[in-house]
Image (cartoon, rainbow, N blue to C red; front, side):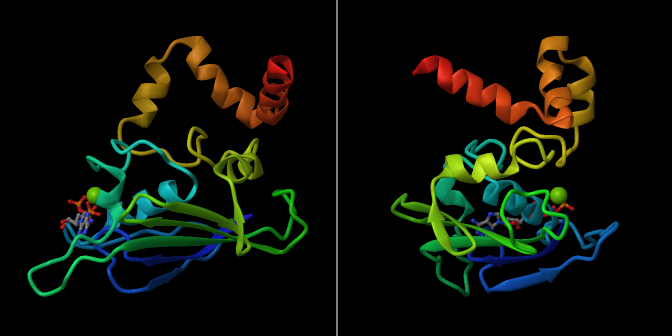
Length: 180
Ligand code: ATP
Ligand code: MG
């Protein structure tokens, strides 16, 4: 499983539809300060369901929508799509390729899609449980995260091991069953 490509449209500084292809292995984003490298990483977190504006480096979620420049007016919608290669069927959908999309309108309406079907955020999250991908998983380690993991209390650190061991989904299903 690997990130094959992504497409940003109206997300932060990416006003135009921007397509980025990745290959298996290591990719690096290079460019001068302020060119949008971190915005690309933000976009990956966002499409995976990030709800924290702080983690998006924004004051309110609408701030992720292109807010215009002197030459260009602001847009009303932001959309990010990830195409993930799933040849080994790690994601529990029987398809060699999976497309995840999130869209946000300036009026606050938001939509998530898996392979172009509208889904709830919960369904999107469940798809990535125990894969190491997702909002609280360990596939995105930004500046300061390693320190945070090393200095966290053992019970806080436990979720990383549970995710790696593949038991997150059973644990959460157990908690939901107990609520019923
Ligand atoms: P550095 O090398 O300094 O870390 P970077 O390449 O990571 O830089 P980013 O933080 O990704 O840069 O991009 C910052 C740019 O994105 C700023 O110029 C900022 O104005 C622009 N930006 C952020 N949000 C929006 C938005 N909603 N609309 C338009 N531009 C935006
Ligand atoms: Mg940066």
